[in-house]
Amino acid sequence: MSVLASQELATVDWTAPWLAPYVAMGQGAATQVGAGASSAQALNAASASQAPLVQFVPQSDLPAGEAYESYIFHSGCCPTREGLHDFFNGLAWLQFPQTKRRLNQLHVAQIAQTGIQPVRGPARDGLTVFDENAAFLQAPDALWDALAAKDWQRLFVDLRPLWAQAHLVIFGHALMEKLVSPRKAITAHVYRAQVAIDSIANLDAWMAADLSADKLAAKPFAHLPVLGVPGWWPANEDPAFYDDASVFRLPKQVLHVGDLPVPS
Image: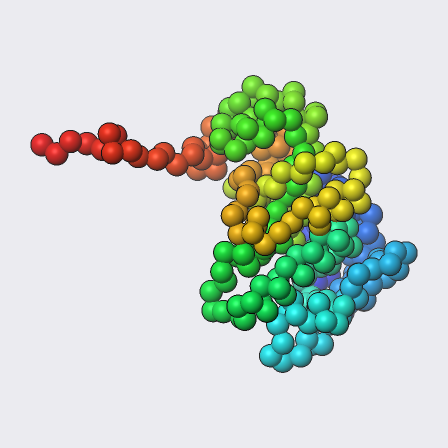
């Protein structure tokens, strides 16, 4: 057991709204780590009631020189370090197994095409951003349009009642890790879910079918400071919360030739 992992997991607030999809398995697994289990052991125990798509193994099982994604694809084993990052990655595998498997398949297909490059290409970059920092939003068109336009006043103040019809689900394990210590600036890459989020299983199945390398290479994300979501942070009950332009940034302006100053 890693003392560091146990100490880090002890700081997780499992009542946080963004962890709602993960609390049942996550809190139990965290308790096992606190009692002496490794993260891999605890995650395997949490998945014992289902037919998991991967088994969690210590990071040391990853053969030297083999790519992480390739090893998962060929072995069905997910190397797991001690700490919050890989613990949350494991929870994502347990809650979104089809989506995680699809991402793994897409990574391996890209590796087969281009090999391991010093700099990821657009597809692998998009896959990584999605895996690490994505959130899924099912919402009325008016909310999505305001989010895409970064019209924060409309999104969070004028249309605030519409959030009762929206569902936001955190997926990225790095995003979950950052939210253990909430800060106003923490921002998700939001992927629009074109399906009713009536269950995580339905969302998982739809997402796995929808994802493609070309789609993710185009970075189809909207940027959302997640603590601005109504009900997710007490301070955002005050409309002035959204006046912080360092967090709720205006969209970049596109300059046209006619907008440029005329030389004197």
